[in-house]
Length: 292
Image 1: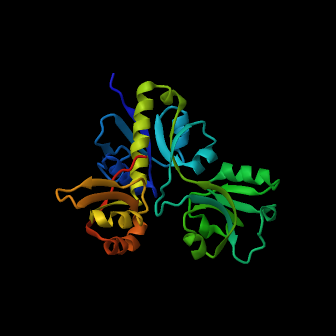
Image 2: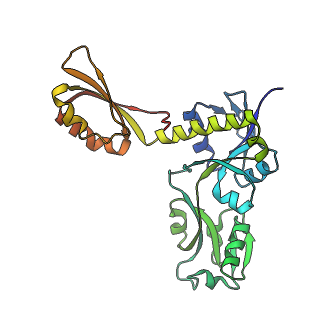
Image 3: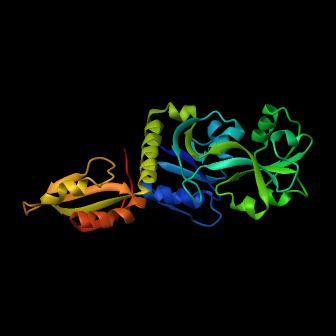
């Protein structure tokens, strides 16, 4: 029997970021058409289904999918019983977590959860919002919204519960954040039946390792350089090493080759220091995967 792992890939705002992450991990997805829900992938052991992240936890729990990538927010909203394999901290614009927030119009009389009593709230996160209201012992009307919640305040709703990555959309609509219900990142999850299958478990663990390795590499670069032995101590003293640097002898006995992995944001300040300390032939190169 052919062994295949059925995996849900989030359709929508997270789609391109997910494809890019898989590409760095060694998996190339190709769409046969703009409307296709079955992208092709260069691994015959994967059967991907492109689907809204809101639905992925439910289909995994039901066994329709073996595994998938979705937000912690949708797992919590669905209340799905799934096994979390890995947290993959990426989103559509940044590597920051998204926040599920309660927001209202600037200048409104809503300042705390208690001020929602008798009010209306528009959201995609109906169950999450209802649980939040129950925790605060507040009765309010929660209406499901197919996105674009920001435009509904204050004419169609008194407040909204939405996800935000940067807060720019809320500011653009003159909205203020009242409270944060949840901080969410993307998770790789699997149903218990698939997790108990030896082959599927190994496949999903390998996939998790490669995806995490690709994420680790995104904010790191490699540096190579040649250093005279007399300058080696002064050069290594300023290196912010992931681990100790790799030092290899060169054909000229008085020189060594040094290689190190560093955070990419440190390079602009580090390179001039390395040069002044005696490093030569400095080369910076990108990384695809870093597995700790």
